[in-house]
Image 1 (spheres, rainbow, N blue to C red):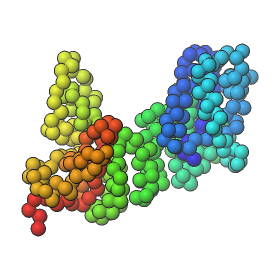
Image 2: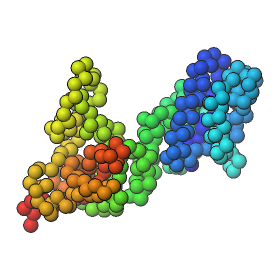
Image 3: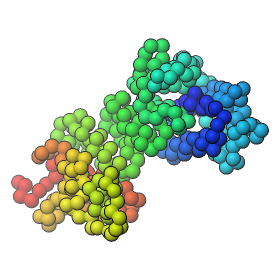
Image 4: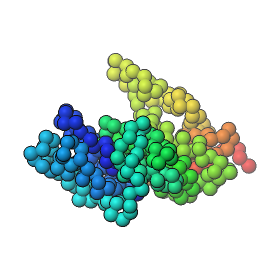
Length: 333
């Protein structure tokens, strides 16, 4: 269990029907992505049985064509698709509570209470509310106990939850490997790279926080750093009005990484020229040999993560290729 649909966020005042339907579609988009990424989500039976608009239950509102909502056919079909697959957690366990305070608001939400209880046991779980209410980490209070709960409504809050999961559950190497596709979904991790965590001097524990932070920035901005042809140093800068393409030079790439305080650089030409050194940095992907010269320095003289810009076989994703304490350099004894 990673996600639970939150009940109270479905309350509707009967106004702005189109906006309410858009919020439902946003939630459906999030469920689609969770399904594609094989991230389990559940709901309570109370979700459909609760009154959300006057005497209308959510079940009435969704399926009664005479209701004020009157969902468009294509939206109702998407709802049906997810409900047909839905598992209901309160068929197997009792509600831990129902009275909950979310970010200062008192609500009735058995699912938020369940998430609160699980997070209290360091079992990372997030709420999926109807967007337009809460977003990101929020303080949730149940029976006087406070917990920081993630409310996932979009891609940034989705990734932030899984990145926080790495810390909440204090994952080991196997846990990082399992969660990486969810915390860093637009990175490609080459086969075998996770077994190289043990090659770091001091092991995974020594570079743990730095590695997580680097992967997060690389996931959020790495493809842009390597491919954006506007000449900007950061995505926050305005796009030049002339729309002229500017070459993405090694110097520009390095300057862009410096914007996030990362020392990422390519190898010097003599490294490629040395057969032993070059082969130590080469990896195979889709029948193509990749020279993975770009590397992040965790420490001045030891511990590196070698990466490669997006290629066709990586489908636009930056490639995380090598974890190592030190690769051979020309002149090494």
